[in-house]
Amino acid sequence: MRTVFNSNQDLANTFAAQSQVLGRTKSMFFEHETAYSYGHHYIAAKFITADNGQKVCFVNSRHYSVTTAKHVQNLFKAVYYNQAETRVFRVPIPRNFGYWQIGEVLKQMKEEAETYFKKQLSARTTDFNYTIAMRIAGDIKEISELFSLCVPSLWDFEYQKEAWQKVSSIWNKEVN
Image (tube, rainbow, N blue to C red; front, side, top):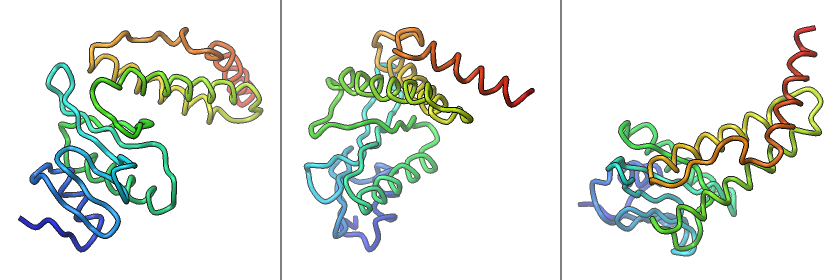
């Protein structure tokens, strides 16, 4: 079993396969089901088993450097393309992340979605922010279902109704 890898991509692929418990490069490493960028202070990705037995991989959506962003992207792609049965989500991962903190992560994701709904209110020609907010809301719903948590309704998101009205008016202008 090789534990020192020549490239971050090789390390990401091995982590995604979960075929061994340790691996490292100069700037990335993994231990069991958690991958790190530069140190234990930044969790780049983590596998957690959902209540229904589904394998889930959470990939950090917070980037602190260009290199860390590349690490996260390598891990996301490796899991997404090599583990068809695994659901992959981009979420804001705290320093110490485990099953017990999924509710807190969902709360942060809801706040992020609400920020995008609010940004949509000032948009004049695009539904870009609304689309991002809806993707995040969909991920929140799916994660909530996987981990037997309360599933929020779209109406629970602040600014969602107003953002939808704005998007509808943008679409109507495009048609006319």
